[in-house]
Picture 1 (cartoon, rainbow, N blue to C red):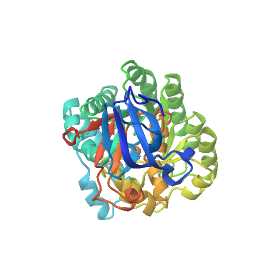
Picture 2 (picture 1 turned 45 degrees about the vertical axis):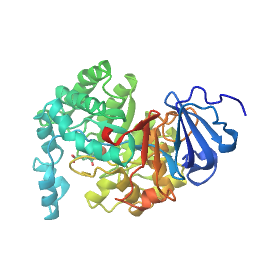
Picture 3 (picture 1 turned 180 degrees about the vertical axis):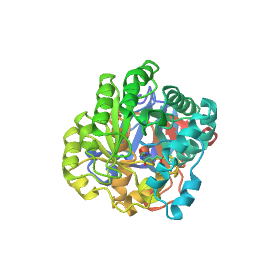
Picture 4 (picture 1 turned 60 degrees about the vertical axis):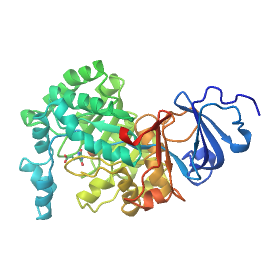
Length: 416
Ligand code: DI6
Ligand code: FE
């Protein structure tokens, strides 16, 4: 043992069982027992067997986990949580027999949220989004992705991304922002959607890049939204701009959007209920994450499930996310998605947990720095009073992390 082996460390966690989610550990959940975790400058600096750690002259903080479980912070890698208004009246209409498509054609759907969102200022959007973000944080979310997509003009899409950044700056959480201007063809361009695609690529994207407002670009590639050709133009512009690529694909039909995005090296392809084996092989070849969104499947009472067995068979990493949005998943709970990922889609609790940690990090292009307990990664950690990590997917409503650590700092309850 070396003296001062923790001389630059701020804090050390002891007496915890770790679900590292690191496959290299070679145990279910990446289980490490009888280890300590040291944090230096906000990163995981050491993971050592307890008996190799000499804490006698360590003068930082020692956190006694009292036998609880330590996991990586949870990552919600797909949300649309900045929007105006609500769509509960459409929920009523759907329960009376109207379909999502019928409601959309009658001027409801995404466009009704676009009207509400355009009518709010950046500050008003922050106020409306705050409780949604706080709900996620209280459950242990330490990184959240937020998409634009309810503005559909240059000014309104920029407003949403700025609101997302301003909101998140109030809390101890990391954010990844995504430009989803290609969510729906705006009414102003109904007869010339290609012109709107041009506006996205030539006017909006350069401003987003200039202001560092987005990490990635997403497209809703679907018969009711954007075609493969239009999606391709947007992906090419995104790649040119050095941004990550994500796609909403194969949700309502098989369009080939997932394979197209995979060809551009996409970080993730999301929804995927109608994905076929060719699409799965394309995701496998590019290392693209398949992000499953059980909240939207549940809320729309869909029947067709994503091909989880085949994704598993071909080794495609699967993430789970809330898709938090007013129309198809007004469900601000990532823990609920862990449960639904298992009950509705057939994931194991271990796959579900990997889907909101290790694979969610990859879905944000951050697999090297987030998502597992691994030396060198960022110290975003949760301490849980549980006896087994399967409880995180198997139980709902009564469990909250006892302690949250973000960027190596302990989060106090009053800070979200
Ligand atoms: N797929 C969805 O499920 C949501 N967006 C998308 O591309 C729907 C969003 C909404 O209805 O407001
Ligand atoms: Fe979505």
